[in-house]
Length: 78
Image (cartoon, rainbow, N blue to C red; front, side):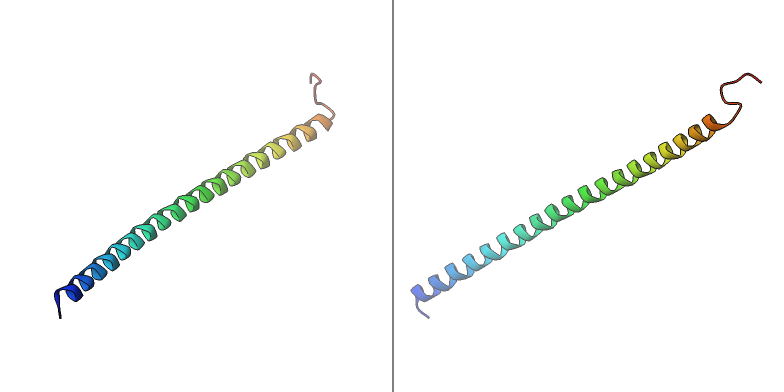
């Protein structure tokens, strides 16, 4: 092999190595990005569940209030 061919092979190998490294870094970045979004979705889902649980408790409390309001002795002194 002559020197020019060796230099070309070296440059090609170096460039391929650089591209592979960049691709790995990009893949890692993409995985982090996706994980961040999954975490956000999970957090929103949890918040939604919490919100649903609170609303359920509010509805139950309102139902108890309405039921108590309809009771004959509600608001009267015994």
